[in-house]
Length: 307
Length: 307
Image (cartoon, rainbow over the protein chains, first blue to last red):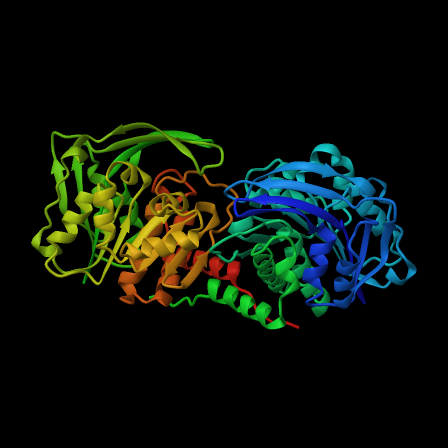
């Protein structure tokens, strides 16, 4: 059994209303790995990095059971770099710089020891690369979860739809669900997107929580109201890591267990935003995580005693 | 024991992306009464109407246990009229016409048979009128719930703060909570608003549900994802009616029971938006309401079985 995570390992420069950092560790696969490794190990990464990616970051992840056999190192290359500025509401941001660097030549080759994959997390990437990883697996994983973004809807819709047709769970935000389906109502959007292939759809709504759709069933997971959202970077990837990490640990891909997995993902994301980059995730204990999950239980728990 | 509802009884003209109506029954007290009377009767109205307010509408409400002794009829006057147009997202709207008519002379005088009031619902109105009703009650009610809006923050902030200081539960939407407190974080906003007096604060977030704050405790009630939101007019008042109706019926004003009351309010609001005006509320059976409340239980219910 193993979990494979496909995505970027990168550097970010960030500005939020609370501060500014010039060059910290980022990337979708990095956040997913920090989050998922709390629940399941090993986490087998598929990514590409330049010679500039810090060895101590790799070592810290290795200690958490993260495996790098599927990560291509380009010694003379530079790692992917993204820079952005968040607005006051933290829900919108401007991209300042996108330097693809080694990511431009990303053509992942799965090592043989990745063929035991049961759970596959496809972080946000070119849909063609996401499909290439699925196609290299000799046995179809028990569950394929895919993240994507509006950029691919605008530049590679045909590929994107083909990739979506190959996965079990699709993760998008509310604006992306509307764009992908052409429907304003999220219920109608969810119906249309499920017709494209995925039996499960998760619509992320940031501070408003997340919705899980499966056929006619729907589950609403709240987000924990926070005093401060310090830096939202990576929150979606951290959510995805907690979600698939819990599923991989429990080996149960039922709708009921996905509800729990969404709560776990939401709890992990609520930590992520408390500090810049993945730093808050790196210091968490099992106790911290369980306490936070209990807060989610209290947040939504109610008794119905109608008069 | 009785519930008093203070608010408007009026006419509305509405345009939504789904249609248009020229002149239908509206007003905050009308929606509250249709909603609350499913749970508790009598509902004693405090309002003002013109000679144009339809007798059959009064009769329909009277059949539901609504009492009009505190409603002033101005035979030669015209009832309050509001006209608005909703945008595609249904969360924003433009006011086209506001004709105060008889509302301009609203100076409620509580009848003696209203002095048994245990639950007081102050619908959105001039804060001075809201305070006048509180001051006319010889015994303080068990619970005072107050709705308001941004308009009073801009035109009567001193009065508004005085009124807020006299109530137990304040209802506002997220933008209003931010405006009233000067805080972007809803957690910080909730702390500041509680310092103004109300021990309970409900922040309504439309399609994103509602938050109940009480000291350091918080409860997140989802909104039911709907295929279509046909007309959001009155949804907030309908929510308030379900909320205070359940509390009045159960006579239990604990935080725990307020959670149930918010779910009841959310269920009622989810009906309200399905048709123009209060028409959907007028045809509901007890069975419809219980079935809808069960949907809310299913929507948020999850088991935590961590591995």
